[in-house]
Structures are given as structure tokens and as C-alpha cells.
Image 1 (cartoon, one colour):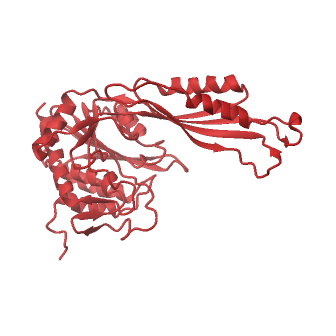
Image 2 (spheres, one colour; image 1 turned 90 degrees about the vertical axis):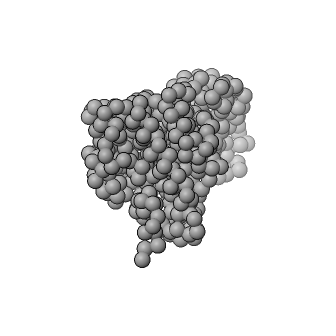
Amino acid sequence: MDSTSNLPDCVTLAKALLACESVTPARGTVFDVVEAALVPLGFTVDRFTLGEAPDGPVENLLATRGGTGAHLAFAGHLDVVPPGEGWTSGAFAPEIRGDLLYGRGAVDMKGAIAAFIAAIPAEPTAPLSLILTGDEEGPATYGTRSLIERMAETGVRPDFCLVGEPTSSAKLGDMVKIGRRGSVNLWIAVPGKQGHVAYPHLADNPIPRLIAILAEIDAIVLDTGNAWFQPSNIEVTDITVGNPATNIIPAKASARLSIRFNDEQRGGALVERIEALVHRHDPAAIVTARISGEAFLTAPGAFSALIGAAIEAQTGFAPALSTTGGTSDARFLSALCPTVEFGLVNATMHKLDEAVALADMTALTAIYAEIIARVTQL
């Protein structure tokens, strides 16, 4: 007899999802599992694949079910980070040991997807959508932004969006994310002229200029934070010269920066500021930037209050509202409607032996069902 036969359907579905090797960018079998679960519930499922290597191909899924009243969308990702070596059992061989379900993606975030699907009422009430991508853990080139374009083309416009990222910290339901900081990475290349160290007048050493640039950048205070966000920060994440010899002045020196910024800053303006600073030191230097996403805040209001009330109804305590942590696809979805993130405890995400508590799976399903019911009443 299957030892999981008496467990909630959310766990059975989670095991099926965890058995799929969906390392980013993901497509195929893991989407088959979701479609098979949603079609009997009356959803229309739209799957499409975009992109080429290295950022693709990526599969996305947009599932919709009609109804009357406020439209709730649940967003998430079916791709996972590479498992690494050293798992107690196979990363894609889901296993229950004690009161935990192990597998890559158990927490981030196949467990939450399974819980939400298990929470959907069999009979349609208010409209529901699921916005699921196979490209969140990677560059997100062909993922949620492509889904948003598809939604615009097909007239799918939710009133509220719940993202199932693992936001809980110490226990399920203790934290909800109502915003995230933005992120931008920059690469600085300072040119020089190679030469012998004994004849510096015949060469041009780029390293002192790069050091001066980084010293000025390090002294920048972007802001002091605000009521909902910590201060923005600039970090030097790499310095490269690549000089194999002790007697050569190098021809180039490079550095990489990462800026995490709150809603007092904008990515484009930060890039322009760094470019201007660099070019004051060296007009020939090259600055390349990639803005991963802007900061966003869903100010406390009806939707966050509804989610807090649903959590409290099931757990007995109210969650804290937070904007901490890294970026998520909520940065794109927040442009559509009020967007809030809530999911499992994040202690083991991206780690070896990633695992979710079976009790948390059951409780999260109940909370999601409570959220769906409360949105239906709006």
C-alpha cells in the first residue's frame, strides 16, 4: 500500500511536481503535471514556449477559470536551481522522512503551487488565474514578462495577485512580503596600455583609475531608507585584472557592482549616476548595466489586510508585513494590480536536502483556501 495514500492531495501533487527535473529554464513534464491537475477543475490552460539558448527555451503556463466578482491570480515558478551534490536521497526523487517531504523545489516553490491548486474549490465562484513560468531562477528573459504580454493579448486582467514565494521566516505565516527592492548589476572596464613595469612612461596603468573610481563609489550614501525599506546599498562584487606576470603593466582593469535599491531610487537613474562618475575619472571607460527589476511597494491596504486576516484565521496570529529579501517576479506583476507574496518557510530553499514540513503543506492549503474564499466575497 502506498504510504502516502492518507496524506492530503497537496502532498501527492507536490511529490509529482518534485519528481520532475525542472532545472531552470524549465519546460515539459512539470507543466504536464500542473495541466493535468487544473483541467478537471474547469481551467482553460494556455502553454507556450519561447526563446533560444542560453536563456531559453522557456515554457510558460497561463490557466484561467471564469466566475463573477474579484479576479485573483496566483503566480509562481516551476523551475528550480541546480540541485548540487550530496543529497541524502535523490534531489528529484521526492521522499518523506519523518514529518518532512524532501526534494529540490519543495519550498521554492513547488510546494506552494501544489497547495494553491489543492485549495481551489471544485465549483467556480470568482475568477481565478494561475500564472506559472519556467524561468524565474534564471535570467527571467522569457518568463513572467512574456506571460504578462500574453495576458494583455488575451484580456486577462486580475484584480489581485498572490505570489507563492517562500516568505515565512521562523514559522508558517509569520511574514508576508508587500514589496521588494530593485536590483541592478554594472560592469566597469577601464582601459590602459600594456608595458614593462620598468618603463612606466611607455605604458598606462588602469588600476589606479579603477581604484579611485571604486573608492568614490564606496563613499556614496544613496539614502537612509524609509518606513518600509532598508537603505539602498552598492556592493563591489568583483575586481579583475587577469595579469599573469609580475613585470607587466596590464592593458585593462575591470570591476563589477551590485546595487539593491529601495523605492526612493530608479534603476536607470542609478546607472546614469555611476556612468557619470566613471567617465569623470576616465572618459574611455566602458560601463555596462543590467537592471533586473525596479523596487515596488504594495502599500498596506485591502488586499494585504485580507491575506493577514486569512492567515490569522488559520494560525491564530497576524503576519508581519515586510519588504526584505531578494527580488522575485512580483517586481513585474506589481504593475498589473496589488501584488503580495506569501508562502512556505524559507529556511531550506536552495540548500541541499531542501524540505517542507507536511503540516505546513496542509496549513498552507487551508490558508490559500481561506484567501480564495475571502476574495470571492469582495
